[in-house]
Image (tube, rainbow, N blue to C red; front, side):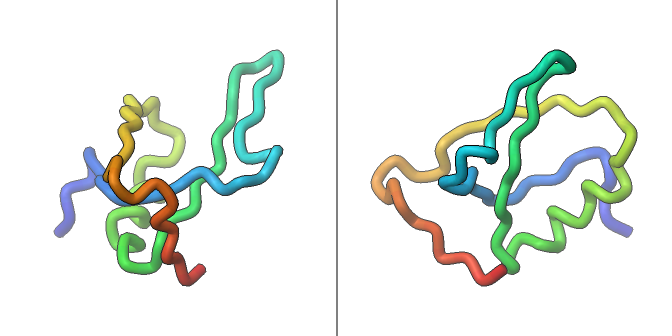
Length: 71
C-alpha cells in the first residue's frame, strides 16, 4: 500500500490569469500535473480535507519552459 502522508510530483502553474487567485478567504493555486506523475498526484485524494504543508521549488533552472504534458 502506498504511503499516504506524502506525495511528490512535478507540476507547473499554467499561464492563465486565474491560475493564482487571492481573496478574502486566502489564496488558491491551480497546478497541472503530467500523466507520468498521476500515481503520486492521486494520493491527494486520500489527503482531501487534511491540513497540508506545501513547499514549492523550481525543479530545473536550466529548462525554464519544460512543459511536456499530456493532459
